[in-house]
Length: 343
Image 1 (cartoon, rainbow, N blue to C red):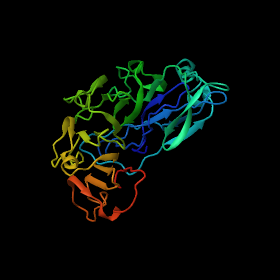
Image 2 (cartoon, one colour):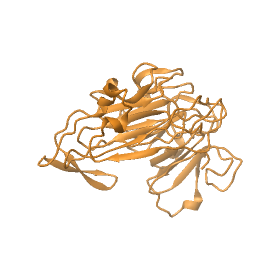
Image 3 (tube, helix red, strand yellow):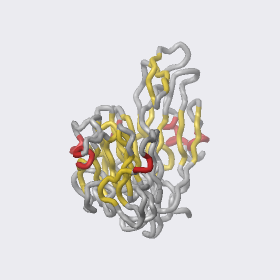
Image 4 (spheres, rainbow, N blue to C red):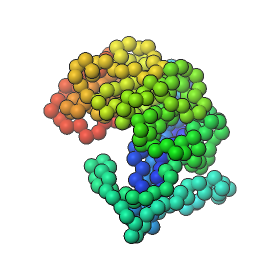
């Protein structure tokens, strides 16, 4: 089985309004310790007003691998996922096997809105999206492997269909990310919660060890976090605040946290380089051993593992524990950034 198979999922959704959680499910995986781990899969269900009740999109994960990586491994060379889009609530047959109807029924999240519903327009990704002014409770659902409590249910029981994360009821969720066997959630009030595998401190709670329930990342409280990132089997977390500050924590063997060392961090730590140089970070991409960020001036910086040129700074066989400007992109206007295991 391909070690890059993803094997857990977290879905942020609204039952009629456009959920603002950003889908990020690229995962890295490993089998028997020879590759960096991929059990990250994340998606968002988004409903917009109109017709029978909006639209939804969900990525369906492939079968789980037989065994996963640990931090000492190297990441795999690929990832796979499928995407299915709906302009209506999915049927049971589309989300689950026939022998699990009760659990699958949780996917039938009622949509508010419809013909004649009052709507307003919200900017999402540069596009005006109609949003019902009245909506019911937004829900977060998760499914797949759960050996390290990464699904947020407070247990280690696998979920074979999307299941509501009760701990997040009442939270207005903006974004969900899934790294390697851990999950992080950003709420509209700027608070960040995490759970799952945490041997390198990637959950950001100030200590290592499995985080069995969704726990607030205290170090980020009041920081004004507006974006988080952890993907492609990452065992580190990136957080960007409204003032452009960059915080990182977790696994750091190749300098992927950007602090000038290879020491892991159990709590989010400010990357001083950008503050000292008057740079505001606005976007980030992560993979198992490296990180790439974009500033508000359009500059692109990379740090971490660089043995095959994945940092884009013109050399190889060199790790960069401090951010390095990718000079070849000077004058360009980056629209998006993402990292794979080796690019």
